[in-house]
Amino acid sequence: MLLSIVIVALLGVGDEYLQSFTATRHADLDDVFADVAGAIFFLLVWMFVSKRRLKLSNDGE
Image (tube, rainbow, N blue to C red; front, side, top):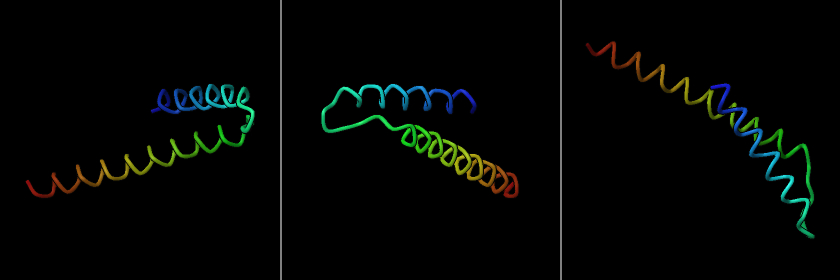
């Protein structure tokens, strides 16, 4: 899970770096934070849904 967050952060930094070369765009650290926050939110929802599905499947046995 931590690896996923690190990968998203690195991709976000790389994306912002590439945007700095585009005339109509600018690099912003807030965008990297937003990317990481989105990844964390997704992972938390995924963990919640996975645990709930596991609990429901175990209750049916």
